[in-house]
Image: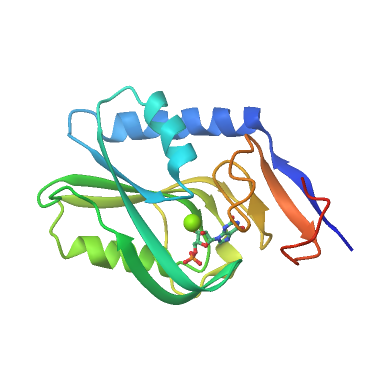
Length: 183
Ligand code: XMP
Ligand code: MG
């Protein structure tokens, strides 16, 4: 069996939804300063499109986390490998993530950032895989809700591959990282 991919969200679907999210954010944060914190690596493509569709100004910073586990699932043991470089105390923070899955990564990040006393802290996830939660977690802004499927493209990877695809695909078939046929 080889691995193959099926289109889930086209570039057009994604760009339309990103504009809608940017419109909501622009109105919710109108008149307030905003620092957008992207979670590397997955969120950078979504974040790049999102900030360019905003009609308000914002500042940006990035955080990076590593979670121990398989390629497809975080174990819950999460460690920050790159911290933000901004003092967030008293500021409005929007954490931007590619996908909300078990919720463990965002739970860790929110708890970590909250103790630094931001004025507000909200979360925007491009995708929300609701059936997979291991800890209760609700994002404030969600691009698309998906079933329990493994997805790639638009920043999302499998073994660091496929991030560059402009559409989002469901990955199906053999999970062997050496399998051919997915490209
Ligand atoms: P948790 O489970 O902590 O994890 O919410 C979120 C992180 O898990 C990865 N993840 C995926 N990556 N396709 C991916 O490319 C997926 O379908 C998927 N599901 C979870 C991702 O790194 C995310 O940041
Ligand atoms: Mg990720």
